[in-house]
Amino acid sequence: MSTLDAKTRGRTSPGRLRALDAYLCRFEPGLLTRTDGPWAHGVFVDVGFGEHPWTTLESAEAFRSLHPELSVVGVELDAARAQAAHVHAGPRTHFRQGGFELPLTADEPARLVRAMNVLRQGPVERVPEVHHTLGRFLLPSGLLVEGSADPEGAVLTAHLLRRPADSADLPPTREALLFHTTFRHGFAPWQFRDWLPRDLRRRVRPGEPMHAFFESWNQVWQHARDTGYTLPADAFRESVTRLATRVSGVVVDSWLLDSGYLVWRPDGGVPP
Ligand SMILES: C[S@@+](CC[C@H](N)C(=O)[O-])C[C@H]1O[C@@H](n2cnc3c(N)ncnc32)[C@H](O)[C@@H]1O
Figure 1 (spheres, rainbow, N blue to C red):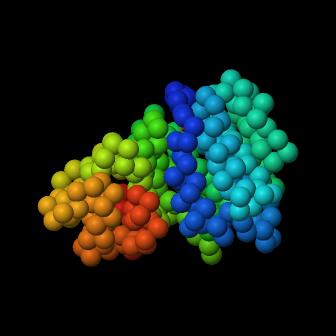
Figure 2 (cartoon, helix red, strand yellow):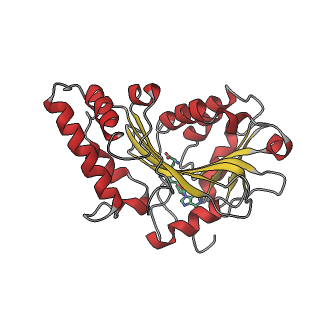
């Protein structure tokens, strides 16, 4: 265990990260399917899969619908959980005990590293170091996804961090923030606050960019409701469309809007 690793509970549930799988299949097919040069061996790494590797297996199935030969490595700090998952291993599906430094070999570069609901312990100031460490095996332009979701995956947010394509030695940069709701609990922008990635949760204070973002979203959402968009999905769609006219970097795409996703990709990256 490195000094960045800390034991946490292993709670997970089937389907919790399905929305993330769907987003990645739709918007990152190149990342999932590339096979040129080192990408031929590029693996998907799921870090901290929990007491049962449901989410790893579900993502493997989703991503293999695009790339049947994809290799998948589930990583778990807890040795008993890692051992128990072995029953689900296959020729291209591996489960290993390990931490943020990742138990990969030199011929297993990562195209995608995901760490969902894992950063709960340890000082929040060390999150950039955790991102840096998780990104060490990423191929140039590879993606690190780190965030949180409620227990059923009804509300989810994640940092999308990209390793620069041309400067392989640089750490991944905070390219975008992804929000998703299934509308199971209705919808209001502030619902996402408790499920923000760990480092952003305490940044939602007056004067901070995340607070300004939520204030703007809340205003346009209230206005949408006041002007007849009463159903949660309608109010969401309308609020994001209006938000995009106020906040730069809010992506307007009909699939995203119709499916409960907001992607915020501000110039210069997601503010700390
Ligand atoms: C709450 S579960 C999340 C499971 C799953 N990722 C999900 O989103 O449902 C968190 C798991 O991450 C593991 N974990 C915590 N820190 C870790 C680390 N540094 N490296 C690998 N796994 C870690 C814990 O042992 C725990 O089983």
